[in-house]
Each structure stands twice: as C-alpha cells, then as structure tokens.
Image 1 (cartoon, rainbow, N blue to C red):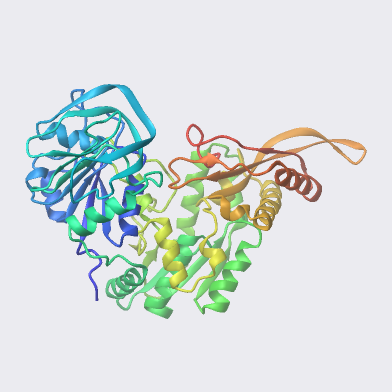
Image 2 (image 1 turned 120 degrees about the vertical axis):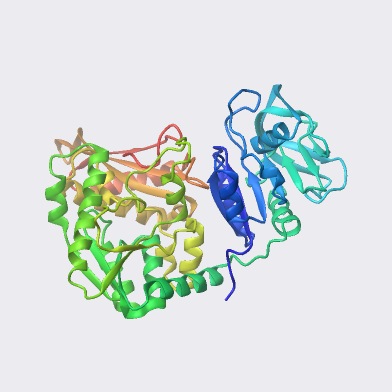
Length: 514
C-alpha cells in the first residue's frame, strides 16, 4: 500500500488569510502537507521530517522588533524552503538581508519579469497577485534576484545551492497566472515529492487504518446528513461493514425532509445500519428560554453527546465514536505553543467531548479539507447532490433562528429555506454560490395579507461566494430571482410578512448570523 504521508511539505503559518489556500494548492498537486503555527520548535519540525517547508504570508512587519520569526535552526535542516510574502521577508531578515517599509504599497495585480534562469520560475513574464507594504531591499549572501516588478525590484529571490526561494507575490491565489506551476516546481522538482496524495490512495489508507484501529470493536457514528458525516459513514461501512452503527438524531432543527433523505440514502440504498432517534422535543425543552448564541450551541452539543452515550449502551461491544472532523476544524481549534492562536468555533467536532466519555474517538477525515472530502465522497459512490450540498452548521437551524428556538419558528424557517433552495437550484444559482440559507428573525413587521393588516415575522436570505470560507462576498443574485423568491415565501409560508437579503461581506460580518 502506498504511504501517502511519506513525501510531505510543512507550512509554517504567520497568520495569512491565504495559508489554508496554500495547503489546498499543494494537496491538489498530490502532495500531503500540514499547517503549523510558526512558533513550533526546531525539534518538533525535525521530527515531522518534511521534504520541504513553506513560510506563509502574514499581517506583521519584519521591520519591527518582536515580530514573528521561523524557528531557529530551520535553515540548517538541509531541506528546501519557500517564503511567500511575509515568509520571503522573514527569511531575508533571518539570513542577513534587509527589509524596509515601502513608500508605495502593492495590492492587487502586478506584472513580474524573470531576471535569470532558475528552478522556481520559468515563465519570462506573468501577472501575479500582490499584497504587501514592506519589500526586500538587500538580499542575503548566496541569493540572487530571479524576478522583479515595478514596485519590488527584488520580488523573487533564490539560493539555488541551498534550495531557498522567496516570492513577494501569492502563487496560491487564482489571480497569480502561473502560481500552480510555481508550487508544482517547488513540491515536485525541488523537493522531489511524489504525487501520492490522491482520492483512491486516501480511501485505501483510511480503510486500512480504520480496520487496524477498530479491530473487532463496534463503532457508533453520529450521522447528520451533512457531507462530512455522510462520507465517514460510507467510508467506515466499506471498511468494517456491520461493525458500524449510525445514529441519526432528528433534533427538530434539520432542513425540510432531511431525515427521510438520510434514511433513504444510507439505510435503504447502501445497507448501512442506521438508528433514527426522534429527539425534537428533547432539544426544544433544553433550549426553551435560551437566546444567547453560544449557550444554544453548547446545549445542542451537550444533548447530542448525551444521546450518543445513551444509544451506545444499547449496542454490544461499542468502543468507538466516529466523527466527521475535518482539517480546518483541527486548525481553528488548535492553539499555538505560545498561545497566540485563538479558538474560532465552539461547536464543531473538535474538543467537544467530555473527559469521562466512555467511547474512544475515531476521525477518519481529520487530515482532509472539505474539497478533498467531496472528492472522496464521489469516489465512494455517494449521490452528487448530497456530496456537493452547501455547508450546514452543527447546531442546524438552532443558530439560524435568532434568539430563542421554538418549534413554530423552526417550522416556518424550514419552509422558507426550502423555497430558497428550490429557486436557487432552478435558476442555476445554487452551484454559483458557496453557501446559501434563510434566517428567522424573531421580530414582527407590518404587512398586508388579503385586505387585512398583519404583523408577521421576517425572513432574511443569505448567499455568499468564497474560496476558503475565511473571507466571502455576498452573491449578486439578480433582482428578479430574489423578487420571485420573496413572493413565494410570503405567499406560501404562513406567518411571514417580509423578506430581506443580506449584502454583508466577511469580514466584517460572518457567514452565519449567530
């Protein structure tokens, strides 16, 4: 069996919004990589044994004291290093070069010209994406300038003997014309990494790992119907068959007809053992009177765990709880060694289990990004509509109902959201957006229903486009489509008098409202 982790790249993160994008681009090339905080020590990096290291961009400036630096000794490891933006500046400063704050900042497109033959950039000229205020003004000993731009005469440098490279631009973004080719040369040609990170190899590795880890024990999976848990179900079913029992908790906070769809796909079509638990009233009772978003998340997470524990006691030899944790969850939940990183989410699959839980944790997707999970889902034969569904938060409609959660609110929101999805799908806009959903606002607005004035609730529609979900822009859905959606919701969903459309970007807003 192919060792998919044998050839790997380490990405040291200095806080760039594009760091996850770097990792995704490297993995698209078939090379495994991980993202670590920049302040990991040298011994830890050496133990990981990467075949190459990438230093990411970041918001700091090298010209100030006490700004982030790569681990001491990293340039003596004998492995290739690529610095991107701040990573270039950091490498230059640490190796004896000079970095200065520029009078002219560069944000957006720039034209780059190659100055001499080199192993990293072979195209004579190209359009790239810049985002920097500082620039290298003197290169370290052993380096040569390999490319320049109008505002950055040292925008790419190289020490071919030691295989150290730095670029001021961002090859990971699609705006950089030959960015993929640059990263491929670094990973494949300079670092000599094979392209073993593929969907088929990942599946094979995950299956063998699951068999070895679980043995003859039984595994319980909390099946939600989302992409992540669905792929875990399909993967583990292929690996261990009847040793897997899926528990599908209908919490009353799911999308319209979602429960029936989950049972049809997994229990009826795939033969997966699925226990459906009707827990709507239990969740509603626990959530009654609670309006604070964080508290709602914790209540929903706690009740899920309680139900899993209860159901596990009914299953002989149940030793494992499988979850759809994916790599961004791991990144966002992990604090750096110096405590600089922050926990972004409170309710996802990482770190949400009690210390006294009797089940061990099995997370077969823990190393994967969402796009990789989807590729695996397709390879495993899951329906495309399930695999490519928009993300749905763990707490479900519980965080799309602002304030207190009530059954009448959830029922109204389900119907409005279903209409929104139907119209987006019919007009081709579902595939054009990254995430879309309806939000229930617990305020009443005056409306006219027939000949009567009525005070009914408000629905907000949200649709965004994004590459990495770290930043997002609101989707520019045509007015006539939005108008039709609004008319349908008001006419077909009792209790709604007004529909609004959210045109906030991320940042400053988040994608979800709570």
